[in-house]
Length: 348
Image (cartoon, helix red, strand yellow):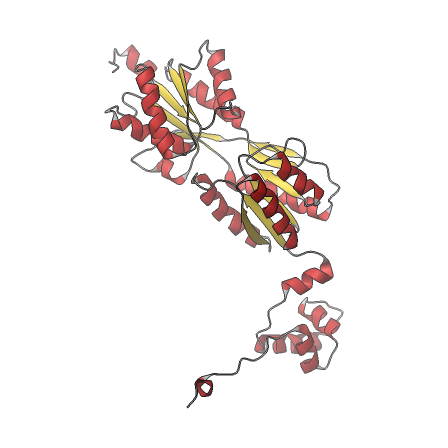
């Protein structure tokens, strides 16, 4: 007996055309009936819907896109994913695009050549628009998006006036961190930066310290990673053993700072305060209990999708930049040194 004897012939996939032939009506009548068009009689609609159900009919989105000139697909150009903020962000975005009936095309960014290549790829897939979640985007990539006339919205970074953007008010968040530490008696404050350039978060922190007549005691530069946080903490504490607080440029750095301090036998927060930015899931773990600024990721995604869909409907809309406030989330990684000094508490 041949293997063919065991196989079951696969029937052709149901289409609008095959349903129209089975129902004895035109393809346009089937299409309208499936959309619930009341111009089609109730009896005919019910008959067509029953045929579609029995044939396991699934709408062809590509074909629908040809007729409507909309694919229902949006691209996400995603930068680094080593920061846990972005996988958490992606999970939220996936759910919200699905709620809106949109399909999400994920395209990773890398080198300049890859950026432009990914932008061209999304156009080839016929996306209606794109979201960009990348800490850095080259001028070449911006130019490619503009040249290909793709409606775009930046998330968690500025569009520089060239395209719409939704981002956390990083400068205000940094200032909130600075004021909080000063109010809790910290005078020697260090910063563990992700890169050499001064970010808006650091600008806000510096401004708040300046208002209190203070400046950063130490600044170390590394990368946006846990390992860099460990290394920067140990370098900072070697340079200035009297540092009272270390601010991480983001949470993953701050968690590395806590572990780096512990490797040196320095307890957090008993001997050193640590604070971060983002409020990733691990920040609330009991082993860290990190005080941090929470980014309003869910609200940012909703607003970004609103802006994108508006610009898909009307590509002539001017760029708009939306700043959303972060929330200082206080846990147990910051000590009130002012109170301990008033009680005569000892420092290391």
